[in-house]
Image (cartoon, rainbow, N blue to C red; front, top):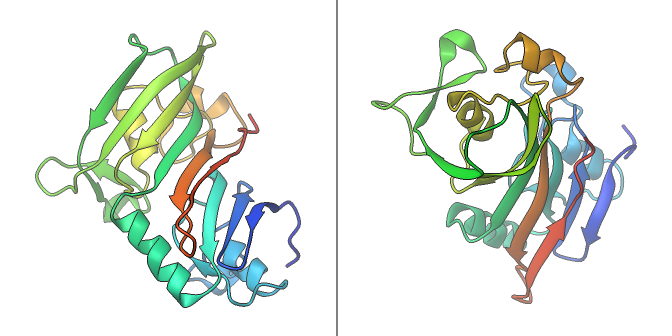
Amino acid sequence: MPLTHIRFVHQDDALLVIDKPTLLLSVPGRAEDNRDCLVTRLQENGFPEARIVHRLDWETSGLIVLARDADSHRELSRQFHDRETEKAYTALCWGEPELDSGRIDLPLRYDPPTKPRHVIDHEHGRHALTFWRVLERCGHYSRVELTPITGRSHQLRVHMLAIEHPLLGDRLYAHTEALAAHGRLCLHASMLTLTHPQNGHRMRFESQAPF
């Protein structure tokens, strides 16, 4: 597949920063018909050395970094693991939160009976922490900035559901009204800060949400 609709935000010998479109996997899925993904497209179109460092959900758009050599991959992966990177997401959520900002500290786990959903589980879940703040109040929905401190699967989507403000267009977690309010999942990785794996410079990247 060509690199259609894939925007390069930054490119050098060590890494690529891509603005991933919605409805594109970060890595191949298990089924043969899910082979099309960001890393495969890059590898087949001039970047055979591209290695995934972290992932965005299929429906989530925005900033994602890939390494171009083993040492850079190792160092960038370490930064994500040790929470030395900074990430922020822009989202549209149902309703208007009473407060202007807050934190959600609720443990999460994968829920096989409702695959691929995740649920809050205070006994068996893994620690998950999200900070949020309202950017704009729009009546039946709000524009918010979400900052995940941990990086659990579906963390932002489940946490916002837990405070009764599910994300618009979320086919897994939104109620009927929130699902119908937008044609796509309104979650976009809008800011990413990391340390360059070769020269040690701190780098900040931004991408405007397309909704």
